[in-house]
Image 1 (tube, helix red, strand yellow):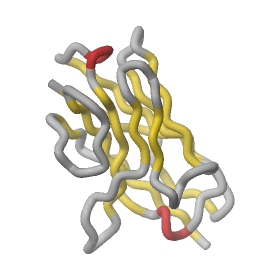
Image 2: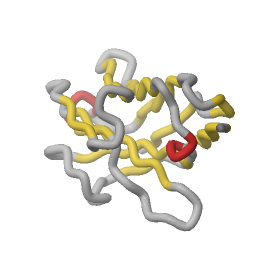
Image 3: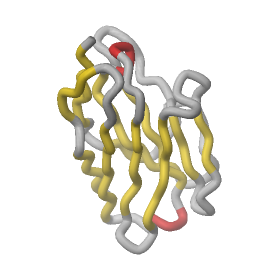
Image 4: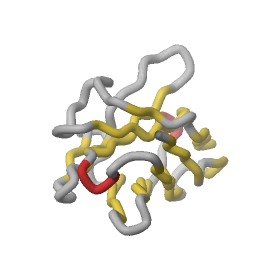
Length: 120
């Protein structure tokens, strides 16, 4: 199983980015997917998750700014991030789980992360 994130980069506060996660080696359409940013010195923290049926869940800190979506044909999951803030700076990890979305880190597979830096 491989999860490969892309789309990170440097952006000014107020800007936007779209992260992508390409999944392979698993029955993607039956997995819940999620995004977890990890800032330096901090633990990974759930920000968005999507079920196989495309029901979505968000942390309060990103509601209205971030949107998670998936393409079960291309085996991709996206995180559209708008109105970025300096506190959104982190390495963003994609995760896959057989079962329901959870805000814990109890996921079966993880990507290697993509770095997002928001300058103020």
